[in-house]
Image (cartoon, rainbow over all chains, first blue to last red; front, side, top):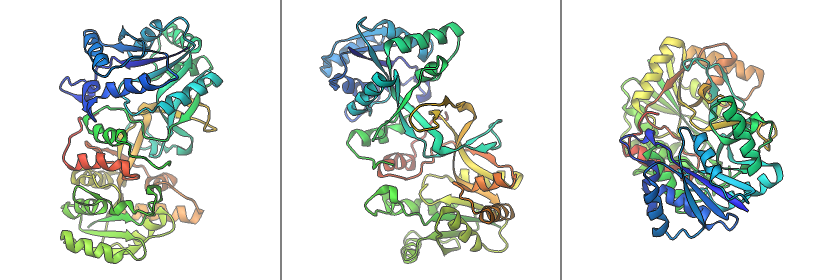
Length: 231
Length: 231
């Protein structure tokens, strides 16, 4: 069976004023409800584990009722860092789960097609991640003041979620991270640590993360079905 | 004196359907009119050279009338590549010009504060560029299929415009590029080639480029004065 973990335990500190970005309304419902909807709707996903902050479990249970999210789901508590939240999510999976798609709660535009493409790639390679070629000009700076060099943009990819894995692979990778006491920015970095190849899966639509309030208009237009010609 | 070059000669092929992204309406006027407005309004800028596509000069002259852009300006024709357009722009500068701010016509949210900060930095270092720390997780891939490694994001900067230079510096840098028959993605890359240090100047607001129609809602919200808390 295939599972999803939706990481919805962030502190959202970049929004300021204690506003939780996951609960901002966009296109008629909270950001995280859109995210949940996609996994609820995907016929490839059998169960959903949602990692939530202490005290917010009732709000999420209410959301499931309101939007009629009828796919099996359960809640687990968040950890100190994102990787700890993912670890908690893994402990909440059905023991029969073979594939897990790990998703940022704050990425409401992820499509069911993209979810399913990462599952297919993870079945093939063991690990896969939604990614977009970098279109900005990227410079490296050693001191944050002067440019050190121009990066070769054709080799750079911006990675998003879902990050999708064979369950045994991601468990092994995160165990290694925890034993070494490391901090990783994303789950595929844990795979790199154990030499597990990770496949890039390119989506055809923007898949932005809501980090600040100014991100909402783009999210709204993507949700409204504005198509972005492939780059 | 200080000059600006607005590069407005792109083909806009990523928008599809022959739509020129520079002429898309946002917040009541064409994208490029917002860009022009900022340089028209900046008290640090003495003249504006606008690089336009063949045949579009009358449309730009009309725009100047309509929006009462009263700062001295002139038009020069675009070249085959962006760097050729910039080269043409340099040939159109007043001989007394000491500093030039080079701007993408498709970046309508650039603030006068940012323009002036890059001028101050260029006076100090010889070259400066508007930049933002990269917030996405960036991976390198040798083949575009599998991840090769995770980049150290704390060293990566996404560069925008204005890219601002001492006029003698950018002339020398682009002459070198042309003599070597190279193609550079931006003007600061030309400076790297001649060993000219380039200073990073961080703006406080988003400064997006209009590349596809889906970029317009964000641009609209920035123009409407939505503030993005500093990251």
